[in-house]
Length: 103
Image 1 (cartoon, helix red, strand yellow):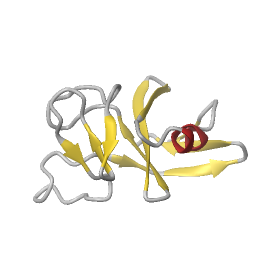
Image 2: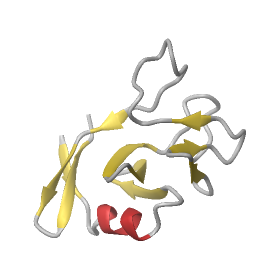
Image 3: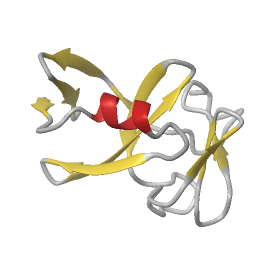
């Protein structure tokens, strides 16, 4: 089910690419990061320990969890290589906002 944001997360993560942007959309806690000239959106929940990514950092093009410093590369979706990989969500531009597929 596609849901529209009330702001532009892409602009926000471009302005501060060194940290994840955590936000809520229709009762879902989400996080967005800007890596390699692309935005990635996923659930704001570390798959390793369940912590929020709020307060995390981007280091060496990887998202670093603030709770235990585990590193995630959103492009790596192979659970055999990265245990507990991030669950990426599809998104698309809708005028000045974006729509996210909250499957």
